[in-house]
Length: 201
Image (cartoon, helix red, strand yellow):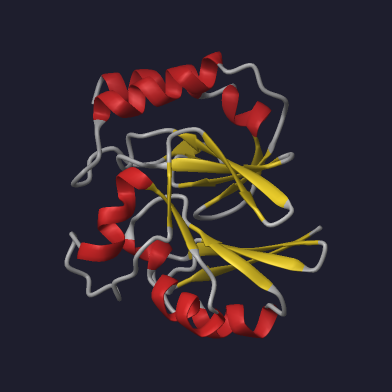
């Protein structure tokens, strides 16, 4: 297994290529991700979106067409791929597979779980593969995603943080949508603080 990552665009959104047994899975191909991805894949299988924000899905359409691979997106965020609700001019794309909350999806020989943690967006999810958590904009190193955007929800974010706190789950490597990696156990230490911050906002 191999992980490649490159921050893309003005928002430095992490695009990941996860290689498993010579098969590649592209996670959150953001602004201008296409050329880098094309140079680094030989046997691409799918595009996986943690959520629908433009800086995470910008290159969906171009890559899906050029590589002839499907797009997997949380169903509650699929409208963002198609309609550009923030008006940034994101090329429209259409998810081939609308992932249900907390669904485990098999893609070829490998399975991924889309843990649903709404708040940043309605469909915001963490994509789990074994001991890896591609946490998108839900959980960062020392921080969490914003809950004050259009389609964000303060109440959903509180519920999601409490859900994470209660989950009985082994430690995971956190690979977020922006900046550097962390571990689940390290971020769990700060959840009570973030719950208070969101509640008091």
